[in-house]
Every structure is written in C-alpha cells, then in structure tokens.
Image (cartoon, rainbow, N blue to C red; front, side, top):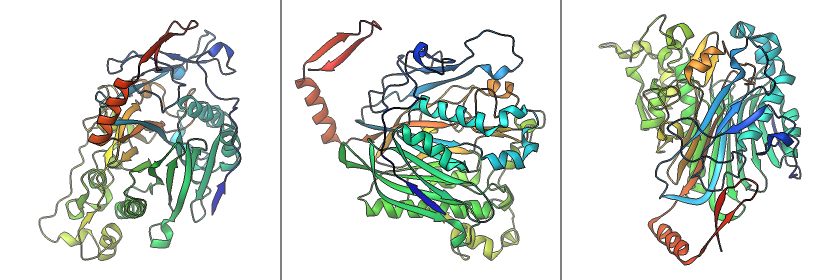
Length: 465
C-alpha cells in the first residue's frame, strides 16, 4: 500500500528547537560547543542546513533538574564533523537523515531484544515524542525513515513543521514500511517510484526512490533512495538482490534526469566488514568467495562478541573445489540476476558519507564507519548508512555515540533515544566545476563585506553588502 500526503506547510511547529532553551517547552535539551578534537568552530545547531558549513556544534541531552538517577543514558553526546576541504562544495546544500525508528508492533513482538530496557522506554507514545524532538533538533531537509507503522501520527507532526511525506508499506502480514519526508519550501518532487521486492521474488521488503529539484535552484536535482533490507542473516542472496535492484533503479532514474546525483539511505542490515558492503563500495562482488549465510556479516555482532568476551573473526568462505555446492542456481540468480553469472556488479560509484569524513577512535571502526548504529540484547554494530554518488560531496556528518557511552545505556531505546537505532545525518553540497569555482571566487572578490555584531550574542557575523 502506498500513501502520499501533500498538505500545505506551516512555518510553526511546537517541537522546533531554538538556540534559547529558556523559551522552549523542551528545555532539557541543550546545545553546546564541541568537545571533540575533530570538530571545528562552534555554532548554533538550529541554523539552516543550507548555510555555511564552517560551523560545528555539539548537542548535549541532559536533565535540567539535578537528581539521583541510576539510568546512565541521561547524557548522550553527539557532534558535527566537518569536511576539512570544501573547495569543491557549492553554496547549495541540503541535509539528509536516515533513521530506523523501531516499529511499535516490532517492539512489542520482539521483547526478547529489549531485556535490559525498562518497559516504559518501549512505549510508543514516549518514543514518538523523543523521535520527533530529535528529528527537529537536527532540522534535516529530507527524512528517510524505516520501520514506520504509525505513519499518520508522524505525518500529523511533521506536516505542521513544513514537511511533505510519502509512505510505502511492506507487503505480506507486516505492518510497517518506509517513509520519506521533505521540506516543502526547499524541494519539489519531480518523480516517485515505490519498489515492492515481492514483485521480483525478493521477499516482502520495500524501498522508495524520489527525484527532487531544489525550489531556489532548478538546475540542482537529486535522487534520494530509502530502503529497509531484509533482516534474516541467512538470506544473503536476497539481501544482495534487493540492494542490487535498488541501485539499478536509482541509476536508471539518474540517467533519465540528466545524471542527477544519488543519495541512498536506510537500514541495509549489513556490516562494514561484509561482502555486501564491499559490493556497494567497490561496485562488484564475486559471491563464490563468500558463504551465503555470512554475506551480511551480522552473525559476528552479538554484544558479547563485539565487546571481546567471545572473539570471532568472520572471513570469506572459500571452497577449493565444488564451489557451486554452497550456491544453488536459484540463489545465484537472486543474488546476481543471472544463474550463470557469479559476479554481482553495479554501475554507480558510491561512497559512504560517514566513511568519507573521519571521526574519532571512540566512534569509528577501521572502515571509517560508525562502530555501532544499533544496540539491543542480541546485536551491537552498524547496519545503517548514507551512500552518495558523484555530483555531490558530504560537507559534514553528525557523529554517532562513543561505544562506551552506548554500552553504558544497557541497550536502546533508552532515556534519551527513542529507537534501537541511532539516526544518521549528513549535509551534502553539490559539487562545483572548475568554471563554477572561478565564478564563485570572482563574485566573492567583487562583493564588499560588512561585519555585523549581534548585540545579544556578541557574535560577529560576515555578510555581503
């Protein structure tokens, strides 16, 4: 079932964060300067994502009333990491968030995943407020949400904040799906494609592909994809097939719309050490080098394994003879699209925004990806990503939580996080050509600068005359 809502937008939202927490109903949230040595200059988080990315900030979640509390999750610290070199970034910028928000039905049906989580933290009404507050705090231009089974409730909140949304429900007996929202005053929708993987023999998962055009710059178009890949770790061929199909359709839309750049967001249910991650990042994968049930890398991510209580190393499963014994013709066809072809390939040149912008050792692994984007009693690791193609560059990303702080919560959701995943947020800029770069420099030199001091904050800002 697909549902498309397009209401008139409103500039007012009761949840929108401002710099002055004394005047905000959710005063327990506070914005501070970054403490990480990877951050640059401090600034206000609530500023528009299209403004200069020379800013950096830290968001501290805290309880404004000091009291004894045994919950170690009372402070969750996240900060922006800026790209060190932005010479190839244009002024036209946009922010994309990807967030698996944990469907209410899934949370109730899989209570064994949340044994260490107080039952009150599982309540949807409570989680809905936390999730809404968090999203408005990051102020993304485009939202890609997974595990959405309360779409109408979310859209009622987001539409009041100026967003427009569209929803694609999973097929079968499931109740959740993927949803995308975007700021109606920032983007206009040119084309929408919903993907039901069941139509292609790839289980009941779904994906979305939307083609956007910036309202203030019609020449700037971007294709944004949103996917929730099959969870089952044993079905690596289906996971690869779903991702391969999404990339194929995204490439076709890009070609149709003048080689428009692509952002792919979602819960991919694969780890950075997996074969499927290699497929995304290197554009090809020989599936015969991997055992099908190990293709996603998820089986090595139980908390005890990750935290060192039980060390296991997952390596490609290589058979010296009888290679086809571990892959049936049907499985090969599902994975690569052809039962006679063992090399899965795609034509997009993709990079991960988080792997591109380095974080600290406390939040990032050897791949550059976050150490963890999801945490419950049976999983601790990274499965969420923001991929991008040529034509755009990431200018900053919202770093994840240090692994020690995440483990200290005992599991997600927690007091300050409304899902068992962490949101990923990245700001992108359209790449500039050499000619555009020269024009920008010339325009800056020709325009005199005026320095204005804000008497309230004492901040000196630079403006064009």
